[in-house]
Length: 290
Image (cartoon, rainbow, N blue to C red):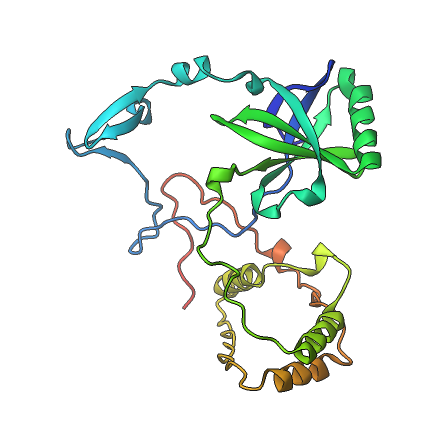
């Protein structure tokens, strides 16, 4: 099992339960190392002090807040630990709200919240109550040198925790949504039909990163000394002069087509192209394919 990112107690009124947090999602992509073009040796990132004109060790680095140009307040890690709020180990439920009232713009990261042995019954009770009432729980949680507002929601018999942005972190765009054009009722009606033609049930397995797939094909082609066919770039679509005509033509194109993007069966490239960190030492990677 993956390592937990936080351990502590979840409190609900006078009920307290020991819980753990596990990361619920992470980005997955092919990673590249930075190499010297001439000899393919991995380059190193070093910490350089321009005042002393030398490379320094990471242990010599401290955190500093610049309160005036060139002047800093130095903060030590031990000082940060001294001011950790109580939510660093105890997550208290503050209130319950309906999930549909929360704008998704506030969502940040997702985690699985699991109970320790002693907390299984109150955990199950809270989960069942949220499932039946349609509410989610709002709480505070401190981790990674920050206190988050979080919400807990039932998911497949357990609880998911989502960290949220604060109100002052949400960026407003002036006049957003206010520049409305005049629409004809007939245009809106055909737009509804176009939406229905593309409507499908949510299935996340249908969607994947095409660019990631192409990068793997490119790596495999290099390893086998082959050329790769460039992806044909789409032509820029023109803004329709006759909106109704464009809507009707789009609707006609959808007829007879399956709903939603179809994920083609992948070749065995994922298992054949294994991206590993370059070996340490002076051993150089294979030369580029001709």
